[in-house]
Structure formats: C-alpha cells, structure tokens
Length: 297
Length: 290
Image 1 (tube, rainbow over the protein chains, first blue to last red):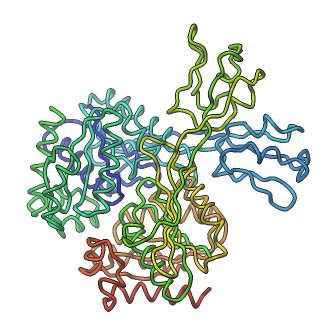
Image 2 (cartoon, each protein chain N blue to C red; image 1 turned 120 degrees about the vertical axis):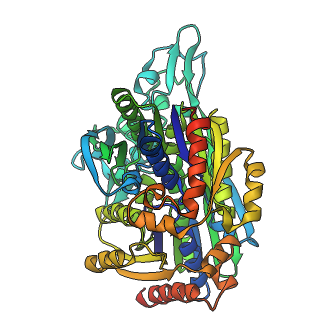
Image 3 (cartoon, rainbow over the protein chains, first blue to last red; image 1 turned 180 degrees about the horizontal axis):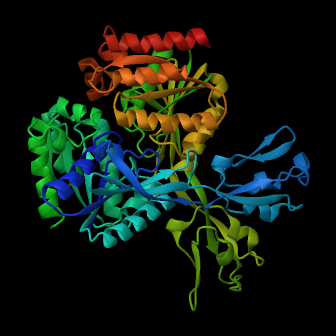
C-alpha cells in the first residue's frame, strides 16, 4: 500500500516519522518497504535515514517548457501583446523590450499565439532529478526539483511512479511517501490515489491550523486519514483536544526528547540511534500500530 | 527595502523570525509584513488584535464553452498545455477543472469565439493593520488548488503596489525552493536564511543558497535559530563563515517556545529575554546597514 506522511505546517516531524517507519518496517519487523521523498523542494529523507547511503540509479526529468523572446524580431514598446495575454505575470519590460521572467513562465504558449512577428520560441529545461538510494538496505526514491522550478507536482508523480516500479522489482510490500509541507501542488500530487495518510501534528496553534487544512484536503480527495501527535508534552491539554478538532483517529503520541535531536545530528532514525529513549518507547508503539493495523501488514 | 525571510526547511522558525523582525523594525520604521506562505499563512496569528483594512478574492480564468458557437474543431483540446480540455463524442468539449491552469490559450486559439471567460477562486488576499506602524498582508490558498505559485506572485505584487508607503517590506516565505519563492527573491534587496543546527537544516540551506545565487547578486545574511539544541551548531557556523555570510544566533529557549505557544511576538511576551535581544541585534544590523 501507499501511505503518505503529511502536515499542513512544516517542521512538525514528517521526515522524522517517515524515516523511523521505514527503518521499523525494513529492519525491525522485516516487511520490505520503499521510501519516496516527495518533498522535492527540500528533500531530506535520505539524510534522516543515515549518512552511509549509496546512489544506485539516477535520471533527469526535462519537461519544463519556457518562452524566449527574440529581441531582434520583437516590436518592443509599440506592441506588448504578449504581456497583455500572459496570465502569469511572466513577462516584464526591461529597457524597451519585453523579457521573460523564467520562474514565472508556465510555457503555456499564449504569448506566441498573439505575437505578430513570431519572435517567441520555446526551449525545454531541467525540471529535476530522481534517484534511487540505498541507505543500509532500505531503498529510497528521492525527487530533487531544480531550484526555482514550478513543476513540483509533476515531479512528485514521477517519483511515485518510479517508487512503484522499484517496489515491484524488489518485491516490497509498502511505499511510504514523505510529503512536502502545505496543501498545494506537490502535496496534492502526493495524495492523489494514495491509500492512507498520516498527519503529523504538534500541539501548537500554528500546527493545528495547518493540520486542519490538510485534513480538509485529504477528505476532499477521499484519502483515509490518521494523526500522530509529536511533542505532545509541549501542551498536554491541547494534545487531548486534537482528535476532536481534526475529527481523526490519533494513533499515538510522541514526547519531546533531546534524544531525537541527537539522532538527527548523528543522521540515524531515533529508534536505531537510541531505542531505549523515552521518545523511542512511545514511537515504537505508534509504529507498531501503523505497520500492523493501519498498513495491515 | 525588501527583505525576504526564507530557508528551504519547514519548521526552522521563518515565521517566528520574520514576524518578530517586522514587529521590532516597526518600533523604529514603517513596516509591511508580507506572508506569502499561502498554503499555511500563520504570521497573522501573532497579531491577534489586527484590524482588517480590506480582503479580496483572487480569481483566475476558466473557459466556458458556448456550445451554440462551438464547431468541435478540437483546436482548444490540442493546444491546452495541461490537457484540461477533452472532446467527448456526443457531449462536446468538457473542461476538467482541476487540471486547468487558467492560461487562456484555448480562448486565444478558438476560431469561432466559442470560448467565453469565466472565473474560479484561487484564494484570498487580506491587508491588516497590526499596530500603528505595522501592517500585515497575506495570501491564503483555497483548499484543493494547485496554484500556490501564482498566488505567491499575486500577493507579492499586491504588496509591491503599496511599497512606497513603507520603509521595510518583510516577506515571510514558505518552506522550499520553488518558482514562487524565486519570484520573491528576485525582487528582494536582502535575503535572510533561517535555519537550524541539524544536518537537514544544513542540507536545505545549501539548496536554498543555490537558488539565491542563481538569481543574481544580493546581500544574504543567516539566522541560526534554535542555537544550542545540541545538533551541529559549530559545523553550521563554520559553513556560513567559510561562505562569508554574516550569521546571527537565536538561542533555543523556553521564552521562544512560550512566545510561539501563545502566538505573540517575543517583544510582548519576553522583551528582556536573550531571544528578544538577539532578534534586536539583527534589527540594528538591518537599520544600520541599510
């Protein structure tokens, strides 16, 4: 099955949960599973799983189309039809000529349709890169969006497709997707057609507000959702209310623990680095519930 | 003066730093805090007693097919870059709303003027007055929309329209290194990278820096937030030193967590704390250097 780890707000512990879950499945209970890092603007899942990784396979996705204006053919300030039709504010006047702002351009071709002198052509550039890593024995597919690119949702689809291929090839049972923060394009692409989602939430007003947003999105997309409360002891009272506020089943809570920071600093999942820490004890219980009830291994 | 506050990783404290910088700067100058984290705008949460000045929805183009004019030539279907238009025999041309980017190509190529303009709401922009010399503007994406990048740009442009009324625009960026973030950085005078002393913080900082340098030369400073959590503090400090990037430390402290928990600026909850004075240090640096 495909399980997605999400959170409306960043930094609540998605990668923390995803990396520990992958370690638990592969190394603790022997259920071979693939990890997919769908946070393509800031991919970290490999780093959270371990420093000793190797790259097995990489490929580029080169599908971003961008407009280019030939200034010799362009009529300049007397025309500017291209600016009028561009819905994305992707053309600006610099000096006496319209110029394309690359990061805003969606390559839709509207400008070239209205251009009277055929001054606009298109080029294709790198969208991002996708690699298959091995961290110890755990296979991780990681998407890395080219900086300043816009097709993050498309790259996430490619990451998921590749993860499915690898999963089949290696005869794995599950795919754990570490999604980006937020509710926008890459997150929607992570959720489309996925089996289940887990929201990682902290008992802070900002995190709960984000969790409510992603809860609404998951509902809208018909993805069955659960929650894990991370650092629940920051505010016990608020933690107790989260299940009702989000209208989801809370699978468990993990306390704040200095060991979690240490584990990150040492680039190891917490349950590997310090399995007897307070947070590990709680985390292991949550992971067992995920692996055997939610994922039905 | 436009200051963009970013850093690839989520949860490192971008909003905490941006909102407190804006608050602190507003003790000396006129400031507009611009929250372009449209997927999860939370800067306004810190200013609970704000008054709304205006709020408007942001709409984008959607085609409406006038079936009496449509001759089913299929040109719009062929030219739609998102494959959002399909020709279903017997039913005509159908729009798959969730795929449409609102580019308007279909309307431009239709030879029969069969495509009329319609609209779809992508989100909202609101301007708030937080205190006498501090206003807040933010964009908020509607649930289910993929168009986060364009809303970032809309929110930024709305802020830029009024930029002459303020001494500083402090822009709170979303996590990541995508197109909307690039648009903001391109228009900024100073970029502040907020990060935390963990390997993940460092890795995301590298990617963010790559984006910043791709967009040209501009002043970059760094804030190492949560200094003292026991991660890779020294390594990160060394990293910025070697790159010649001036960095500031904001200590991990109870006061910071408390200010965050109560969603209030640190200058209100703990003005005498080390956290408040380290934010003040950044503010003084900004005012003196600009």
